Image (cartoon, rainbow, N blue to C red; front, side, top):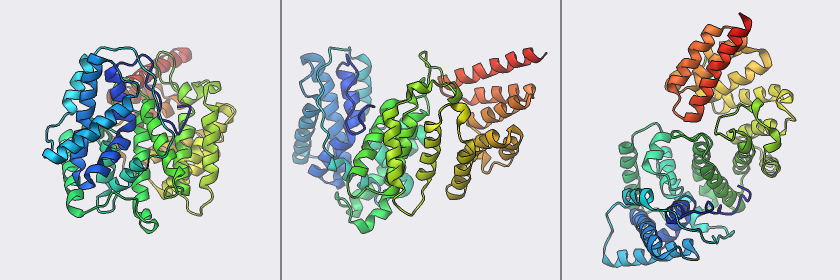
Length: 436
């Protein structure tokens, strides 16, 4: 993620399947936008079918005949031709996603080719982003739709992000597409007066996309840098366009950059999760920090304060601390206090408790955790017992620390998180032996 405006190149040595997957992940919004321009927003499902068919044909053709000089242009040209044929001969109805997945699993890697990309602002993707967030569509449905057709999420990934079932997400997507087809929504950027109704949905979608990459909801990887890079790229497009050049959009981009700056030090070489105080700060991306601070400064040009301002402010305090010991936890706690007032959630209150521990000690944090609002929403998460265990450990209550670490381990779904909690249990044992 060295250039926040460019599409990242595919991995070195990528074969046809990985090239198509890379294209699907990073250019889905642009391709769908171009197709929707051709077939109309009321034919959104047709655009999806055509895009998937083009990618399936790419994997088959490239596996036999080699990878073309410009894979992106190849897929786009095939998709446009398919869309024209479909408009002439009727709607394609067969879902292609399962076939793509199967093909990816069996296709062998072949030598990579040079990858061409463009720095131009892609207005079709931007238009599609705002269409997904039309006020006629419910807020949750806006985000689900955007994640599907703009960001290339599978229904399974969306279901995990929303703690729902794939069947429920599929039904919601079908209803949303039908609503778009029936309501006469136009494929155009809205006039300025309507932006206020859509911009928050756009920002929420980008925020969710980044968070899924920052902490994956399932799998064996804690970090999915490709999703974070895509969220940053889309946010950069947004703020570069007059319709998205808003203080809270700059604040969100600042939050992403300042958070992503710590990624190189977030996990060890063997994939183990490292706590903030364990990270080598020399590995933090200074370019991202500088860009993040610049966007944070631009976010202050308005009078309104958003949740993204406060979260970016917290990220900036971490990013600019010389070392863990010099972190300004008092200011961080003040930011969390404001965030609890502006946009309260169980996770925000949980993070505030952590900041509280650094300022007023672990007992104050445990009292805050005991009074945590809506704690039932964290019943399936490992976060609450993990933080509770850490506070008990700091107080020297090793039995309670071990009990809560084991509860957290039972709930953790990501392997690096499970490894981290296992090491925490070992840390309890070492401390206990050292005091006996």
